[in-house]
Image (tube, rainbow over all chains, first blue to last red; front, side, top):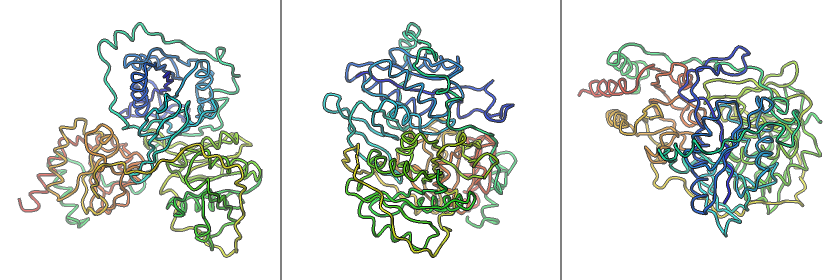
Length: 264
Length: 328
């Protein structure tokens, strides 16, 4: 099967965050970037299906120059080649305009399946895969915890997470977009051989002119939602912060739990 | 567009999801703030009983799409009845509970309607140029305020715990449910069944003391320091999602929206930053202690006691202090 995988590069969850001058996003300098967690699982799932069906995985990502690093890593893990939607016209969008650009790039080739993570760890709309599916006219499933390709690739048995520890199992017709939940598999590490091979694999830049779209359909202009402000959340009453070296602070905590909270 | 606000409730086997009531309250507040009229919308099969649960609430009406093909939820089935109904009635806002089901189909519905979709909102305020919505970003470390561009229909989902589902406004208007046309129901999944996500079942909901470990532990071999503390406290061990996904603890130890919801006397969270999906599963605990190296971690917003520092040093120290306090 030929599988398109969409990945997003996001700030490392351990990063210390600073709000940017415009007050609508974070200061991007000095940040460490990684592949979005659920996208890593989506890539792994796609690689497994491609390996089992003698297929290939093509990786897509939208974002500035730094995104090449994420794509290079995806190629080291086993992607055959990559497309980098790198044009300022694409940037600053929401799920609807980002999904539109990705779908247009995906539609330039023939794929049996599109896989992506269920949600980005930065903005977290969880909608981009749905938008891609809608534009391609394919069914989709969000929060996928299991995929079994059936009937020579015409359908898939999908396990989807529900609330409160239950999974739902159903059959979906292919081609489809599957938005993968973290934890579905155990992502591999890149091998030295894979890293060496990735250096020779193609990362093709894609700009607006290459897609059959107008500037008003993509990026910030094509977005349906605008961000007015970003801020650190207001603390409620907040925690009583205990300070001291580990032994002191531990003793203080136990005392508080005994005498103040009265639960020990 | 009309001044109607549709609140699409979630039900399963006729049972209303708890967050459906939070969505009702959000819709009622939105109606008050914008001079709108709130309607509840139910989609499913055999909903007469379910509809009667809405009697006596402060709503302008109830709309029901009741058909056999809607017995099991499928995005195609739901969208095939909701899209034409919304396109005809043109409600300004459509409110959903922010559940895994909503995120599965509401963005596609918004796309089919060419409407804006704002997921996971935690509150709103009426601004000069329309309603402004709050929603968490970057794992809850920051909050953004967003607005749909002008002249759009807006679909919005409301995050768990953001609106008081137990304080839904009551009213006295008698309501005759209005039927939504279901002639074109078009399910796009063949439902095969429902299964338990975890193999074995550790029930954390009955535990009085829980020690929970997060990504900050860094190394699965270090989880033993939390096990020691749990033993000293007589507590059960729980975990946040990344620990489970990494395979460091079995899935039946997971606390949060896709795991268990717990309300122990003591919840001690070590190395858990506090993404909202985790917080919804533990914020009802009587006393919450958080240990995290990042003073900006959102877990400190819900904790009663916080310690900023390295859990690898602090947790063993607490274990010793607990053992000592219990008389060695």
